[in-house]
Amino acid sequence: MRVIAVANQKGGVGKTTTAINLGTALAAVGRRVLVVDCDAQGNASTGLGVEPAARAITSYDLLIGDASIEQAVIRTLVPNLDLVPGDENLAGVEVQLHEDPRRNFRLKDSMDALRTRAAAHESAGYDLVLIDCPPSLSVLTINAMVAADAVLVPLQCEFLALEGLSQLMRTVDLVRGGLNPDLEIQGVVLTMYDRRNNLSDQVAGEVRSFFGAKVYQTVIPRNVRLSEAPSFGKPAILYDHKCPGSEAYIRLASELLQRERERTAA
Image (cartoon, helix red, strand yellow):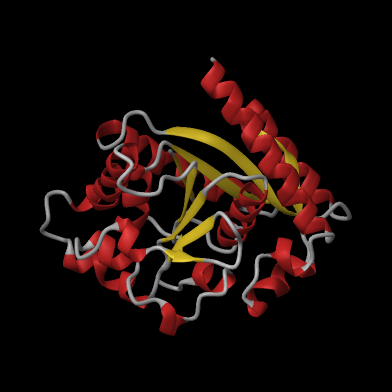
């Protein structure tokens, strides 16, 4: 089971859109995928068609130790794609866990327990877990990075994007320093790319010059259908699988799987 945190401390860069559409594309080719919604806004849950009333047990319950992942899991519209939903209670986790010496390891403990039960065939296992992180450096983001094997970074092709990226890299270094020394950058995904805008090309060029092969060849275009899909409770790939945004996420899933094959073969 490979755990990937979809993270960027800057808001509005396409984290949730990436988590749900990448997860859908991976599920469509037969991978068993779990999306964990760790944002108090619960947008990943909404985007996968899970209404607030249906979120009886959420990632909040995992973090405070009241439930296991299996108890929180909800099946989605997408075959092979499950969800641990998020809700507004997550906003209070920082305060509730303030004095807990293991506050940064709560999600990791849940993931480790899931791995153990799956290995013993006591629980369904997953090929990939995608954690949708909030747009901030909080106990939620730290928990996600400590629980993760790697970080996938959506990065918008806009002004100040690189500044947000430098903040994220400092956070990754902080986590590596004492909480999860094996954490790696799985890749950087350029989002909201507008071929008509020279700035998009400039940002893409700067990111590629800095991160090199870590930057995915696939870029996610600025696309109205990607923005519309969550209001219908569907990933864009179900809402309109032929739109440029959906096609880009399908290519991204293929590229991610190729990277993972190369990693395991190395």
